[in-house]
Image 1 (cartoon, rainbow, N blue to C red):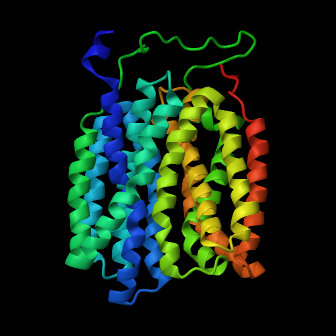
Image 2 (image 1 turned 60 degrees about the vertical axis):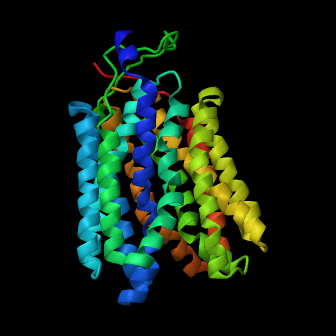
Image 3 (image 1 turned 90 degrees about the horizontal axis):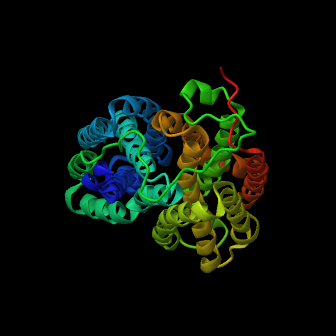
Length: 407
């Protein structure tokens, strides 16, 4: 096709990687927490509120942005998200001395900005690559998981040399340039676009199918809620451990906090690689089989490694398996949304599904604390999480491409 020659679809992937690396700054907020406590006397709980708010408004932004980009295209939405995120960081540089100021600036504005921008590269790349949805989605979201490897050390150095406020200002500049610049390259393929040599699979004649579902049609179908629960269990299991990796290392493996913190970079790398690997193999193994693999990986970590992590190596391998598996859900769920409900309203539809991640992000890290308080040991939480993973596997078997029973 002429349009395919004019637009190299791999340019969309390159732009998506740059954008997602920038948006991964959301996970790097923990670097600010120590300095905020030391300089301003904030409690651990106080410094956690902005991150909790950013996760929640990340999910809210996804819903609004998904609907907007399905109508206006990805470029405007991506640039708006980049500007909003940058403004949030700039304001955080001014308002960081109060918890409320950080919640408003970094949590609400920053979280919304990430949500607006995050959905655009995923929906765009899936539309350009119907022949390899899993692989490309995994590649597109790889940067978000790996962004911590870049921004964690960078922010830490900036805080040390220039102070908290100036570090927020610098991050704002990077977001403005990186997110808006990469977002300006996004465009959707022409109607009816098919990559050369690829033909879509022929649907079964015995099943009533629908190529593209509206958001209202989707949320009225039971299969959407099956996917939603699968995403909730998968995301919550990962986020519970990601947020508590250091305390688990201290309590179970008897590590010092400094040694345990040193393993987080490796976990972040495996989080990113999990998106690439699971997304890629899902194109060959199938999305459902790959989801079962993700839950099985969790079970190895939760039942065998982490409860018995009496050495640094066992602990590190355990948290890395969790990060690797967790990354898989971020690659698989957008692709499954497209597989089940089409690509016409993909941004809006995936925004609704992503609310499962939002709820997991807000409540998941606190659930493990509640279980630990109730049982007296963090290892007991592993068994509760394992039960949720088994339920997730059962739901995967129940999940299937929905039949359309409308007019």
